[in-house]
Amino acid sequence: MSPPWTNRQNKLFEKVLARYDENTPDRWQKVARDVGDGRSAEEVKRHYEELEQDVKHILEGDLRQYGGSGTGSGNTNGGSSGGG
Image (cartoon, rainbow, N blue to C red):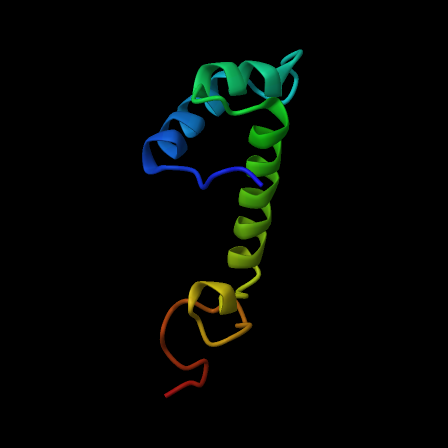
């Protein structure tokens, strides 16, 4: 198991990821090289996939793992849907 990602590594990861799009040959090797700190291509790819899943859950309104109360309807306006 790899060590947790630091805030610095995450910021760098975001910047580097913007540099290499999904069509870049050897994308994960390049991202790993630029992130440094001994991160492997496999680690950066896994990190990306985990972040993708996090975003998916957030967009679906499933906030349980983030301290939320469960799945939501996606309604974020804070008010009721009833008329007045």
